[in-house]
Length: 140
Image 1 (cartoon, rainbow, N blue to C red):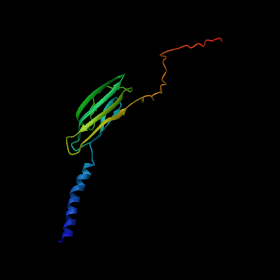
Image 2: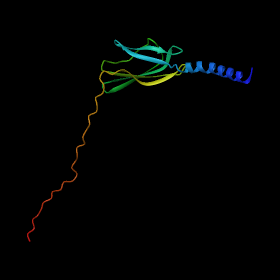
Image 3: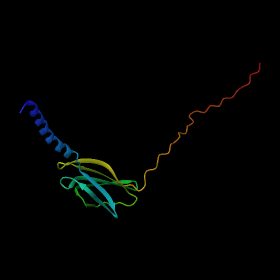
Image 4: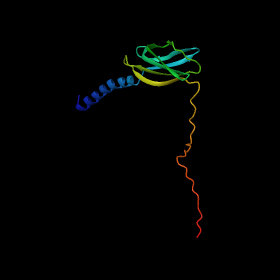
Protein backbone atom coordinates (compact mmCIF):
# COMPACT_ATOMS: atom_id res chain seq x y z
CA UNK A 1 0.00 0.00 0.00
CA UNK A 2 1.23 3.42 -0.84
CA UNK A 3 0.95 6.38 1.47
CA UNK A 4 -2.19 7.79 -0.24
CA UNK A 5 -4.05 4.46 0.12
CA UNK A 6 -3.17 4.26 3.81
CA UNK A 7 -4.45 7.81 4.26
CA UNK A 8 -7.79 6.98 2.57
CA UNK A 9 -8.16 3.76 4.57
CA UNK A 10 -7.49 5.63 7.82
CA UNK A 11 -10.11 8.27 6.93
CA UNK A 12 -12.64 5.54 6.11
CA UNK A 13 -12.00 3.81 9.45
CA UNK A 14 -12.34 7.10 11.36
CA UNK A 15 -15.60 7.94 9.59
CA UNK A 16 -16.94 4.46 10.30
CA UNK A 17 -16.22 5.00 14.00
CA UNK A 18 -17.43 8.60 14.27
CA UNK A 19 -20.62 8.59 12.18
CA UNK A 20 -22.53 5.92 14.13
CA UNK A 21 -21.74 7.60 17.44
CA UNK A 22 -22.76 10.98 16.01
CA UNK A 23 -26.04 9.49 14.79
CA UNK A 24 -26.58 7.94 18.22
CA UNK A 25 -25.90 11.30 19.89
CA UNK A 26 -28.84 12.78 17.97
CA UNK A 27 -31.29 10.67 19.98
CA UNK A 28 -32.64 12.17 23.18
CA UNK A 29 -34.92 10.89 25.91
CA UNK A 30 -38.52 12.08 25.55
CA UNK A 31 -41.72 11.91 27.54
CA UNK A 32 -45.14 13.28 26.81
CA UNK A 33 -47.72 13.75 29.55
CA UNK A 34 -51.40 14.04 28.65
CA UNK A 35 -54.72 14.51 30.37
CA UNK A 36 -56.80 11.40 29.64
CA UNK A 37 -60.21 11.81 31.21
CA UNK A 38 -59.74 12.45 34.93
CA UNK A 39 -56.11 11.19 34.92
CA UNK A 40 -52.69 12.55 34.06
CA UNK A 41 -50.79 9.86 32.11
CA UNK A 42 -47.22 9.47 30.80
CA UNK A 43 -47.38 8.69 27.09
CA UNK A 44 -44.79 8.36 24.37
CA UNK A 45 -41.78 7.58 26.61
CA UNK A 46 -38.52 7.12 24.70
CA UNK A 47 -35.34 6.13 26.52
CA UNK A 48 -32.72 3.39 26.29
CA UNK A 49 -33.78 1.88 29.62
CA UNK A 50 -37.52 2.49 29.11
CA UNK A 51 -37.96 5.02 31.91
CA UNK A 52 -37.34 8.70 32.57
CA UNK A 53 -35.17 9.33 35.62
CA UNK A 54 -36.95 12.33 37.15
CA UNK A 55 -40.22 14.14 36.35
CA UNK A 56 -41.51 17.25 38.14
CA UNK A 57 -45.16 18.18 37.59
CA UNK A 58 -46.48 21.63 38.50
CA UNK A 59 -50.22 22.23 38.87
CA UNK A 60 -51.49 25.78 39.32
CA UNK A 61 -55.03 26.21 40.63
CA UNK A 62 -56.78 29.01 42.50
CA UNK A 63 -53.66 31.11 42.94
CA UNK A 64 -51.46 28.32 44.33
CA UNK A 65 -48.93 25.99 42.69
CA UNK A 66 -48.31 22.40 43.79
CA UNK A 67 -45.19 20.48 42.80
CA UNK A 68 -45.12 16.69 42.48
CA UNK A 69 -41.91 14.72 41.86
CA UNK A 70 -41.67 11.23 40.34
CA UNK A 71 -38.72 8.98 39.47
CA UNK A 72 -38.37 6.04 37.10
CA UNK A 73 -41.40 7.09 35.05
CA UNK A 74 -42.41 4.54 32.39
CA UNK A 75 -44.92 4.78 29.56
CA UNK A 76 -48.46 4.36 30.89
CA UNK A 77 -47.66 5.70 34.36
CA UNK A 78 -50.73 7.35 35.90
CA UNK A 79 -49.64 10.24 38.10
CA UNK A 80 -51.36 10.59 41.47
CA UNK A 81 -51.93 14.35 41.31
CA UNK A 82 -54.96 16.51 42.00
CA UNK A 83 -56.10 18.80 39.18
CA UNK A 84 -59.27 20.19 37.66
CA UNK A 85 -60.31 21.57 34.30
CA UNK A 86 -59.32 25.01 35.60
CA UNK A 87 -55.76 23.91 36.43
CA UNK A 88 -52.67 24.87 34.49
CA UNK A 89 -50.29 21.90 34.23
CA UNK A 90 -46.60 22.01 33.29
CA UNK A 91 -43.74 19.55 33.74
CA UNK A 92 -39.97 19.27 33.67
CA UNK A 93 -37.95 16.11 33.18
CA UNK A 94 -34.35 15.01 33.49
CA UNK A 95 -32.97 11.70 32.30
CA UNK A 96 -29.27 10.97 32.73
CA UNK A 97 -29.22 7.27 33.63
CA UNK A 98 -28.12 5.74 30.32
CA UNK A 99 -26.62 6.31 26.91
CA UNK A 100 -29.65 8.36 25.80
CA UNK A 101 -30.19 11.44 27.97
CA UNK A 102 -32.13 14.71 27.94
CA UNK A 103 -33.31 17.62 30.05
CA UNK A 104 -36.37 19.74 29.26
CA UNK A 105 -38.35 22.17 31.35
CA UNK A 106 -41.63 24.07 31.54
CA UNK A 107 -43.48 21.85 29.08
CA UNK A 108 -47.15 22.74 28.71
CA UNK A 109 -49.81 20.08 29.31
CA UNK A 110 -53.00 21.97 30.08
CA UNK A 111 -53.84 25.63 30.38
CA UNK A 112 -57.60 26.15 30.13
CA UNK A 113 -57.44 29.91 29.98
CA UNK A 114 -54.44 31.75 28.60
CA UNK A 115 -53.29 34.73 30.59
CA UNK A 116 -54.84 38.05 29.65
CA UNK A 117 -52.86 40.45 27.54
CA UNK A 118 -51.47 43.24 29.64
CA UNK A 119 -53.35 46.49 29.16
CA UNK A 120 -51.17 49.52 28.75
CA UNK A 121 -51.46 51.70 31.80
CA UNK A 122 -51.14 55.42 31.24
CA UNK A 123 -49.42 57.04 34.16
CA UNK A 124 -51.67 59.47 35.96
CA UNK A 125 -49.75 62.56 36.96
CA UNK A 126 -49.80 63.52 40.60
CA UNK A 127 -49.98 67.09 41.75
CA UNK A 128 -46.93 67.80 43.86
CA UNK A 129 -47.14 71.56 44.12
CA UNK A 130 -49.97 73.86 43.12
CA UNK A 131 -49.37 77.56 42.64
CA UNK A 132 -51.89 80.20 41.81
CA UNK A 133 -50.60 83.28 40.12
CA UNK A 134 -52.61 86.47 40.08
CA UNK A 135 -51.77 89.49 38.10
CA UNK A 136 -51.94 92.82 39.86
CA UNK A 137 -52.59 95.92 37.93
CA UNK A 138 -50.23 98.66 38.76
CA UNK A 139 -51.35 102.19 37.99
CA UNK A 140 -48.82 104.76 36.89
